Image (cartoon, rainbow, N blue to C red; front, side, top):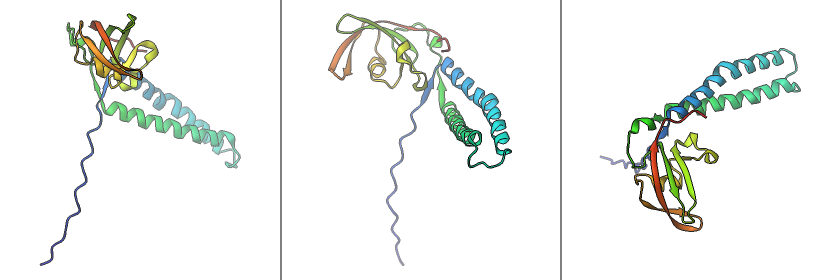
Amino acid sequence: MSRTSQPPAEPEAPPPLKNYMTPAGYARIKQELTQLLDVERPALVKVVAWAASNGDRSENGDYLYGKKRLREIDRRIHYLGKRLDQSVVVDPAARGDTDQIFFGATVDYEDPDGEAHTVTIVGIDEADPARGHVSWVSPIAKALLKHRAGDSVKLPTPRGIVTIDVIDVRYAALAPA
């Protein structure tokens, strides 16, 4: 009786990161996907078909550019569809009246220099630091999560660890960008 050895089992891949989104962020991505599927792609397909009917495709700029742009649109459609499929929509307005920091919170805090800052913790696809929207996986959000108004929080920065003071926490529906 011969014994066959089994190769060692490969370690399981970690589960994919949840794609938390606010309702406004979900609507924005859904709108972009709809625009690509219903308007831009069909119009470009018509241009490519017209360019292809003009003959020699090897030197046809409209055809070559159109095919390249079509690949870009298809890639974006695939990406957005995947992001929406993996999304978990969390409405910050439904959180209620709490001073604890979770996804969707708008947080006022003071840095060590006494300067006031306001950030809103949003999904990865919604992050816009210029508007004060930070991703829930960003260092500032990770440091703030689960703390409360009045807490002092240690924040790792390139200059080292600094202590920030949480002033206020609120939850409100975010307007679409």
